[in-house]
Amino acid sequence: MNALTTLPPGVDEALGLAGQLDDALLHGFARLGDEHRDRLEALAGVFEGSPLGPAVAEAVAAVGRSEFVARSFLTLASARVALLGAAHDALLAQAREALGRPSPPAEEPTPRPAAGSAALLASSQQWLSELAIAGLSHLEETTVAPFAATLENLQADPDLTGLAALLTGFVNELMRHAPASKSASLPSFRWGDLWSAAMVRTHQVPGSPTFREAEGVLTPLGLDVQAHENFACFVLYGLFDDGEARTVRVPFSGYKVDAIAGAEAWDLFGDVAEPVLKALDGRKTLRVARAELRADGDLILRSPPEAAGAADPFGLADRLTATPPPPALYRHPVHIAEPVKLPRGHGLPIATERIPDGSELTKDVAGEATELIGLLRFDRGGWRVQPLCAGTRKKYAIAGGELTAARKKLKNRSLDVLKERSSRLLRGS
Image (cartoon, rainbow, N blue to C red; front, top):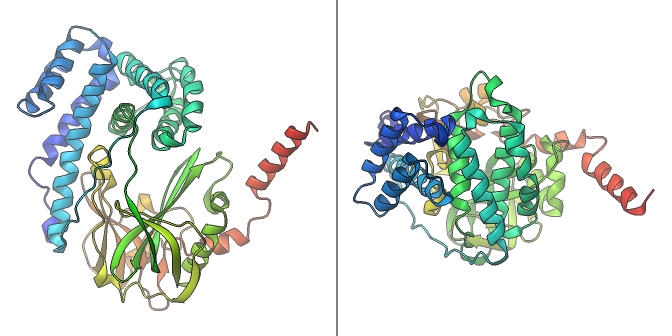
């Protein structure tokens, strides 16, 4: 992994330019000083000669004249997304060159017509523009609260789940920091990520990836957990063999309330989830039928898989493949998750912040492992590895292997309590 000790040319510069835009977003476009305007003009210079060049130059000129329209903020957000997308592509190419792994082709699904979602998208875009004008460092609860009604309607629109989940998390973070003037520090780069990602998603409804029906044997490699108070996303990484072996992601996601957390969150996913958790606990493979294998590398389970034989992830690790790159809109260094097998002494830092609380695969277990299967991540300016599966003297430890035991210890299930309360309200009792 010596090839990963230095960054590809241009990555630091792209991250720096994104940070300069974040400074303006934090300060507020209505309060820009000469230094901020100079930085925005430098940003426009970087895009000169590119397809985005004229639009970025026009947007920078408009905000410099204090002409604030949603179109200008959408363009600036697009510029930031393009910078981070270029950094993503350079870093992913570096990782795959180091691994000697070819990149599969990317699919760009055709956006769908906004139709009934147009008003919600426009409302979201306007609110995000108002945040940029006022400045995130001048945030007040009264800035965020009016968006609640729009957010509730976004959450009810299945075509906008990605945008709604993103904005739900963003709103939660903003409310925790309000009033921002009393916060010792603000996560400017993270908020720049969330603001720009949300803004570009207000432009159109994303298309769906193509897929084909698939059946085969899935060898679990470990679980990646991403969640906030009101949304949970668990991704099982695995090796799927339907005549051709490939690395896949098996996603489980849905809205929740903050009372539902940890192992209890799996109650949201019904009968399909239970065999997956048992397979992780018992180190078993799964026989999958009538699933959707999507062009983006996701394997969508449409019926509960069946337990099969003993799993041997390390014995199959030489068959790990790259997953297809995401569409351009979603490319960002933080989303790089390249599956990799590493020997002891690999030299990469462990991404401990990505290990869930209560996981059997702790930092110490990962550090002492004889061999490791994980996700190559780009975090905090350098390469790190998120452990999924660690070889030990006895059976291997796997991320998610502890969930079945944890769920057996649960007594009063929050989801059952909430259902009962809802039922009482509906009955009027």
